[in-house]
Structures are given as C-alpha cells and as structure tokens.
Length: 418
Image (cartoon, rainbow, N blue to C red; front, side, top):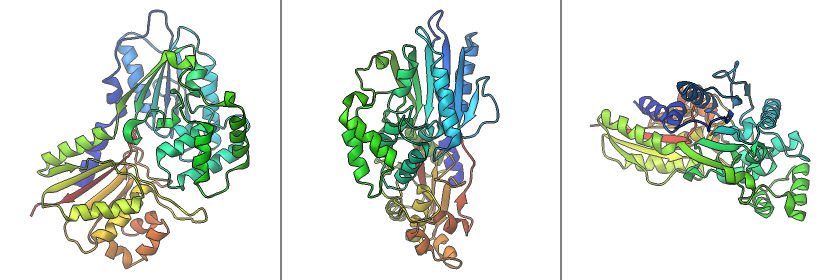
C-alpha cells in the first residue's frame, strides 16, 4: 500500500505533463528558439517542450540536455551526462557544452531553460581561479554539513560557473524563460539548481558567514576567490539590476505540494483518512523520523499521515557512514515504532535516489528494529549514519531507480483499519 501511495505522488509530479500543462503560444515570428534542460527531470521536460513545438509545426534551433544518465540525443537534442551528487569530469564536460551553446545565442532569440533539482552538480564547473578539486571538496563538505539546501546553494552557486544568474547573463541578450520543477522548501527560485537564471542577492560576506559555521577548513582556492570578491565588489555575482534579468522570467511547474495532494487523493481511494502535515519537513533527519513515528502512533486506525520537505544529516568529516536523509529518517522512525503493531512508515526521495546510494528510501514498521538487532547493532548504525547498511540487512530499502522527477522527499505513514 505504501509503495502504491508513493508512486501516486511521484507520478503526479511527472515533469513532462506538468510542463506541457503550462506551455502556451510560440516564439515571436522570426525568433530562434533554443531548449536547455538541466537536472534530474531534464529528459522528460525536454521531450515535452519539443513535442509542444512540434504540435505548432516548429522545431528548436538547437539545445542541450544535461541529466544524470543519457545514452544519446534526447528528443533530437544533444545530451550529456553530469556527475551527481558530487561534480566530476562529466560535470566539467557538461558545463563546457553549456558554455558552447550560450555562445551561439543572439539578440532576438528565445531560450527555454528547463530546470530541475540536481543541476547544481550535474553542470558544475568552478569559476576562474577555483580548482575543480577544491570545488568538489567544497560540495562534499557542504553535503555533510547539516545545512539546508538554500544555505548550501548560497555557497555552491558562488563558486560555480553557471550558478547565481550567470547562465542568464551568458545567454543575454536572448530572452530567457525558465520553467522549474522545484526541489526546495518554499520554492525559492534563487536556490533551485543554484539559480542559474535569477539574480543572486547574497553577498560575499553572507557566504563567508556560512563557511565559518562549517567548522572545517575551506579549500585554498575557494578562500582566495572569496577574499578577492570581498576586496573588489565589482566581482560580485549578478544582481537584480543587471540588464540580463530584464529579459528573463520564470515559472514553477511542479512542486512537492503536487505530490502530497496526490498521495492524499490515493489514500482516500484506498479507504484511508489522509492528514497532510502543514509544516514542511526540515531539520535533522533522525529527529524528524522519531517525531513522525510518535505522531503516527497517536493516530486512530485508517489514517494516512503525509509529510513532505527535505531534512538534513550532519556527518563527522572523518566518518564513513553510508546512507541518505530519507534512510536515516526511516531508521530513526523504526526505533520509535519498535514493538508497536500495525503502523508502517515510508520515507523516500521523489527522485528515486537518496544520498549517494541506489535506494530511494525505506519502509519500516514495528518489527524492523528488532529484526535488524538480530544481525547488527542498529543504534550504532544510526549513530554512525549507516542507515543503508542497517535497513538493507532486513530488506527494508525501497529501490525504484531514477524516477525522472525531483520534488524533494515524501514521508507516508499508515495506521491500518481495525
């Protein structure tokens, strides 16, 4: 049942249909249209955009698709794979391809930027003066820091070639329309995919403050670059007054709320009473897992508790735990549910990949913790952030493969009837 509910939510946020539902009209007469799709939902968004144009008897002048996995052109557009969650050699090649395309656009052109989560890493290349190795080290440190995605991307986009509005500047004077599948709480467009086509209102001093809170050494070239910006404000990231943003707009086409509402609709069809939590999931994953399990145990039979958002996991830099935020949430929930009959909880990323693992998340109930304890020390696993190993030992992992969308995480808890 829980997996059924999960897929109902994921399918509701399918980026292709969502984009098709908002596309309207066609480019101005004589305008060349380019399609740039970036992120985990790049493929279905590109396919929907090309199909929309075909219905109007048009075809793009060109474009580029940057996604986690590609095996050839997508909807007739060149496609390249990037690295995720940490940038690597593929990301550098993808970033170069993006620069090559930006150099081909001109005044009077129109560019549709189809943006989804994951773009920050998939098309990551460092700004001049920062080494690729230091950029990757920065990304790794941030992902284990416990910072939320908005704070992480405030830092990451500062040092990424196409973040912080720099892509819009590179595409100017072409008109830029950005269609977005949101993977950020509050749908903050400056944080989604590191805001490649929107102005960056943060300052170098803001980034300095966030880096100071990491409690670890900042890579050398990152430190040098930031110091240079602090000394020379003309090196700041593009701000709202930049002419590039006068010819750019954006629209959210899918978000976590679509997923939660679809889960609730499917729960009703299954005879359950859905309850969507009003506040988005945020904060430490383990604490959220415990709180959600306790809330679920307090519900009456035939209830479906639904929550969405994005938690964090703060990992010791010297640690080597394997897992992700949804798996850690599920493991903590399993501990709280231990011995409680009936209630079952699923926690998973809507993109199908939780952290640097092949699992989307996990499904746990009152027996899961005890079953793990027969083979392992689950409390030690939780303390060491080894949720993947613990949950995998009892077959509790949810493995879906990449789903083609990315609207944060969903947690679904069910107390069956009677």
